[in-house]
Image (cartoon, rainbow, N blue to C red; front, side, top):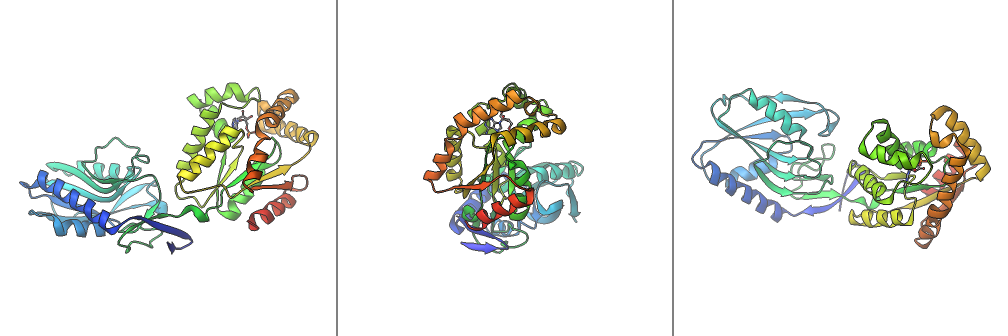
Length: 367
Ligand code: AMP
């Protein structure tokens, strides 16, 4: 295991595997391009190692060049622009763009735009690594070395905030030092409020299933339309829908230091699914922290919140009581579920927001 900046990484793809993959790509391209004099164009910086190893074994005549594209925020999701352009004339030529990795496809899209204007004869794309689960575009990728899951990787040219490019093998984020918290408690216990403080302090991603449903309702998605009928009555949304949605939210954040699950799990089936899912990703729950308060206090809080939030399920005492019934029947059994795993903690949920934050910090710092 290695440490780069604040994160730990474990070995993921060996040098041998990488070299075999590079060799496979070189022979595939050699077969297709032997009668051409292609120009291989490397996309810096990440490609430098792959490009060099590839060139050493590419057996036929070729030319090479490099361009550099930068994305804002250092991720592949920002706006992209060309930084260092091409020096030679490529009109009428066969061009093969080589990439170290294609994930969302934003860079690839930009490349298509750039090369469309240049009237090349053939435009092909080859990548050492490809993340099919992250890819959001339709462009064809002509040569793919290896498909990898949507995990954050470094090494062999790829960096974590500029470190790790010189490693001869590829490493993956090691998730054991993640903090994954479940904030537990009845509606109105203050989970969302506290999650906002905890996510800042511990640099975690906050996932509130209620918020995700409300966002979908607001945007009129299929998921939102389905969830609304349950939520308006204060009933739980079916497990399968909720579990899939939760996993999708986790998948959106492969670089997270950890997660705060707020409003999930709410049933034993959800808790089991969460355990299985996290285990499959080499992750796990660090602690479940229940915030406790009396029903009558919670009802008053929710009715107050309903006046400003406009949430239908907060405005009607009958619906609130139904949510508590759902909690008592379906969610309360999770206390034992997490006690058996020695992960259950409680804090008093009555007090000022600051007082409760201090109590939660004490639990987390003691983990
Ligand atoms: P919340 O914002 O956490 O109070 O959630 C509001 C509503 O969203 C709940 O009453 C449910 O209808 C739905 N919901 C949120 N999370 C879940 C979950 N884990 N399982 C089922 N339904 C959920």
